Length: 465
Image (cartoon, rainbow, N blue to C red; front, side, top):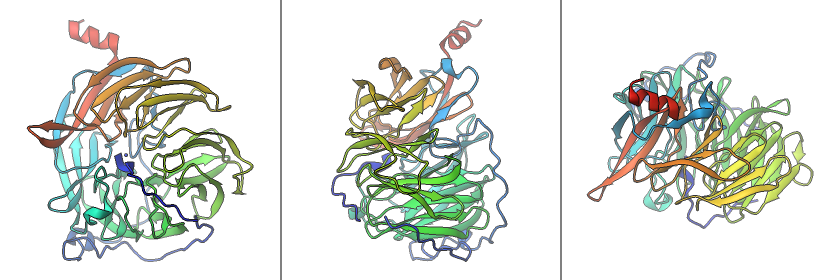
């Protein structure tokens, strides 16, 4: 099976299976600088030891769509929270990227890229003040040529991930997908080429952390892979080939139906892999040849959407084995939810399409509860704070919506920038958003922090009570 996408993919805006290839060796990149030699700091890093247990707080947003990649936060009082109209701080971000913020403790990590000098890097900011703490170059040179990148993609579209000890990033560089690790102070630990990659519109699949592994998904026109890299040593634990095809979805790792599963969508197939071994558990056809959104789970169900050329939202029971296409698809709708990932809460599935149409379905039956238009176009994914949904459109508007199965209810909206493509992050009672502004024809990026509080609390603070 091949997956042939010819449309303009806006994926970054956030199959062959059952063959498992154990690979030995330590991390070491040979393709990082303009002349093809590795960046010395990573080339000279010593191989690490066994990975320490993940050490994260419940308030950390330690990667793409948060701790469990479901895009949701449930904290005491969060049902009443909404963002303040004014940011507590804004700081300029050098370069360009659609990677979302990763927040661990009092630090915010962000991937970015300077297209002119061909440098891909990770930058750390203070979560309290926005002050830049450090910047670490990961690759110098090695960018794909312009014909291999979509104009709306960037060379830093993958959100970094953290286990509380280290930061992990994935970049497309020199026709390969490289995973690199550094400690929380930016010291290089290891770098590993996870596999080759033939770019069509670039790369946008964010790595996932679970147990002792960093999970990396890559789907390209000459074949892809789902891989697990030892996060302590930087060695390859397993790599399972995938069919040739172009997709941009990030994998999730979840305990579903009593099994630890890596669930990856792309190339008109959703596949579940055993998280420890990479062996295929089940597969299901759909939702489309090209998938950009990230799957989510609700109980034993997997919810996934795709946008080209097929346009489907579907619900799959993750309890089966083998090909479950004819046996475990609970429902499917011909709706195009292409780039933004969805939210499951309260027995309902919420989505916003790239063209700004909001949907709500019953997860159990698939029955549509409502359909209603929002303002503008969307690339950022929905996130949830308690009973509220946050949605950012490409024109820089931040919407606060009620997670209401009865109707679309817009509680507030505020234009906070000229552009938003990256999905926001929530840590504690703060919202972190990567935005862009245009001044005198020039585009510049910023990282912003907005306090989250109940309206009554903000009113009391403003009045001095």
